Picture 1 (cartoon, one colour):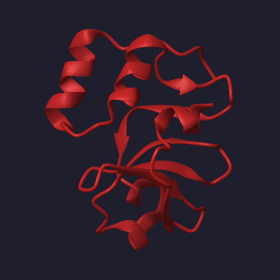
Picture 2 (cartoon, one colour):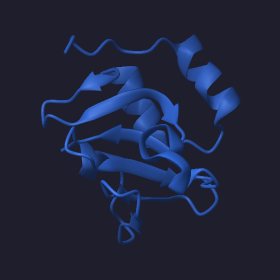
Picture 3 (tube, helix red, strand yellow):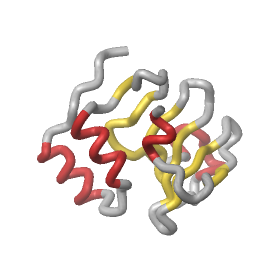
Length: 108
């Protein structure tokens, strides 16, 4: 996998135009480090992805976004309605994390 490349301010602004509720920590990570493989081995997406792209029809009506994955079938997710972060299992089941956990907990 290629080295992460930080996103430009204009790329970040375009993301915010399309996804205004994105977590600040995710945006800051993209600005400072970039998308791609993190040192932890997790993959950070350049932009949010709908869960149905990975999990198919079982997540077709989801309002959540995927922001990364662990290359083992689990994806880091974000619910823009509630502001919660959590994880999708390999079968597409959503499990929100306890309050206080966020994007940087996932990356590390």
